[in-house]
Image (cartoon, rainbow, N blue to C red; front, top):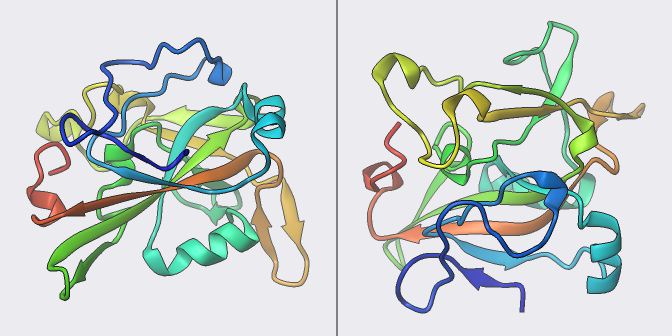
Length: 202
């Protein structure tokens, strides 16, 4: 199964540094999403997946729970005029760090009163490296406060931008086509509020 739990202990999968398993992933490093659970999405058969996406790297996209369904059915839509874009430019943002994507600025925090657990969702995506437009630094002023967001990823490379390459005339939205595919929904469930978990209090 491709549904996995990541982390030391409790039977989770864990590794240090870039995963060295002989797979290419477009020469993009893949670090352990420690503390997260992966719910795999059935994009296509395993054989077809390897043929098409073996050279695509893992990046993440933080979002709110209520938007997950529309993203999976309609695709990733570009945001206009935000960081590192001109006023008329659009981009979709894919951090290489799940810790950065999991910050409440990007991934909303939900509380389940029945289970008394805190829940966050982040989309795990495979991205075609040739479609990357820009790689830029974090935008939460971490440098000014001496904070390193992720031990594996430089603060200077936390924003990976891809330009939308398709347009829907009925809605006027620009979106990605054949540049990124969502392959998993990452979930972090905890007893503590996520901002109290060491490593994401930025």
